[in-house]
Image (cartoon, rainbow, N blue to C red; front, side, top):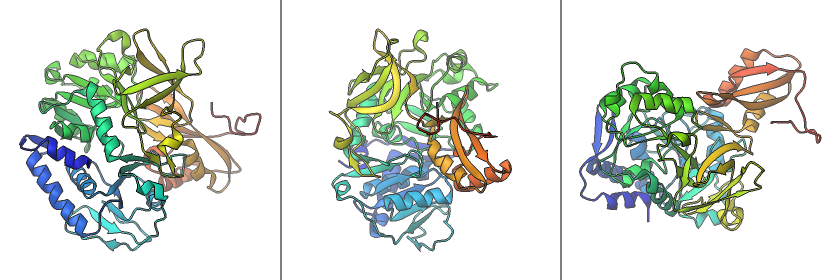
Length: 469
């Protein structure tokens, strides 16, 4: 079943609040009416089953309504972070063969056909692209709903394809731990380009009210916490750290909170304890993977297990491979709601998953009661505030800059942000500030290295490859 039709059917007759943002509030009947109305106009404009629609907008009520309308039409939604550079946006559009772009800005150097201005909010522009689409025919057989690129397409991101069925299965699985209901008031602060499928869609399936404070951060976040009577928080360790350091917040404002989920990156004991001292609640670490869903959530509130991502949910299986003498091994997962395919190059899930098992790229260990701890990664990806960055993508931009011989991009551990992007550079001559400006022109802001270091040479392996560890 189409995931939006499922949301409609599961909340038929329910009149409670669905979305709240600033002074704007939308009830479930109003949400359904707005989505259906927009979907009819989108269908008249050519969005139908299998049409790829890229969306590059700031998260909020309009983002949700537009996304649901595209999905209801059968369109395949391709989220792009709103701060992406033009080159990165074009790269995604060409790679997926997107026929529609819904954005808050126009792209220079191209004259798109206006898709029907007037059916979106004034700040939103929708354009149709006349470009040849050559997709693998096997993808056409998937009832695709989403294609997620974790870091553009110039690194090693393959483009993860999720079907409507996979979304239904993984939201059902996640709810085994989250237990969402119409009594819940969710405080939302994460970027919707990265967090939507398992969370926003699950919250809507269960009739929860979503209070959005993604904009005007951190002011709106703090004021919403103080005034919003939340029952459920879904944020990153950075957000919990900010709350713990905010003067004037009392434990009373958290009195209704039944669960505070921490996601996107590892949480330190210090952050967990500081937030508990303020609220009386320990943040529950969650383990989210775009190819899998949300297989683990630590809901135990056990101080001795603050660093665990919890027990495996009932819909999943886990095995550790190549276990060392400390009990740590590579994490493999299988279960319902796994991804359907990679887009570039096209590989169906059955071709990737050996016996149904997905190699997460993470290293972990299990304690005696089955609680999972993530202890490292065997991939190069950098995690900055939960946003994944491929070093190769940043290096490709740096290495094209005049005078640079080679570079190495890596993550430097940071207690608040997870990892900071840094770059070692071998160059004949270089003005760091000019290189930094070039990176800002070519890359989304969070991928630009926070520090550049000019070095005589880069460490290499025996085979001559750049040593990343």
